[in-house]
Length: 286
Image 1: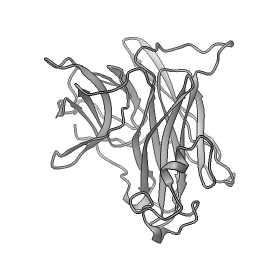
Image 2: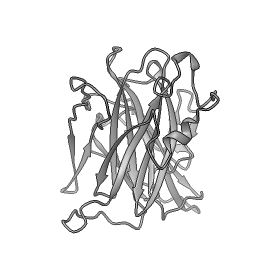
Image 3: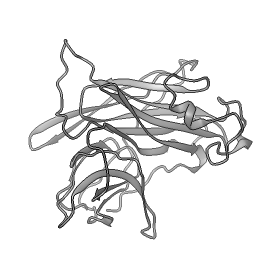
């Protein structure tokens, strides 16, 4: 796969912050196949504080590729715990992921698709561990030749300052996404979701979280310098009804943390979502 790296520049209070988004290389992919991160779409953003939607957004369009800075506000009688991604449907029903996206009260992530994120209070979360979670999984394009685009957002422990790269210790850690498909695991699309309906002898979760890359598993990885960032991977449409299984991970100071495992079908992903909302302070949209 041919790599095309995009850099997003975001300015706030006269400071500039650069984040990089990349599609990863995996084996046996024709050179003519390429994946470009597209920043042209406008995307829905819903931010909930302590279970309630915090304001509406209308003043400016928020476009895919823009950096969103969030600061969890104080809530009377409660202690901020963590950020987590989730969903809010048209009826206002909320689902919050059990995966901790960050334990930092100030959290940055790059918008790459329809996103709902929750500031969670009075919950158990280990602030000494790094965090990684899928912030978006969307369809990039409208034809069968396009890609599933997955973005993992990582965050180091809240005590870690943003380090500066240097020649002595240039790599802080590793972040990545591992994935496989029904076909790579030896099953056809008729097998359905192998996580919801396991097939004897195939453990998708174990394969994706193994200490070594197992047969049928592909990986997209990079080193990182910053305390927060994003990693985006494009996987070509696996075919009608076929599933892509993916897990995001971060390795920091000898410990590896995995996200939840996503089971994705190309036909069921969102694309071209439209911004309908104006988020009040203390949130920054850049």
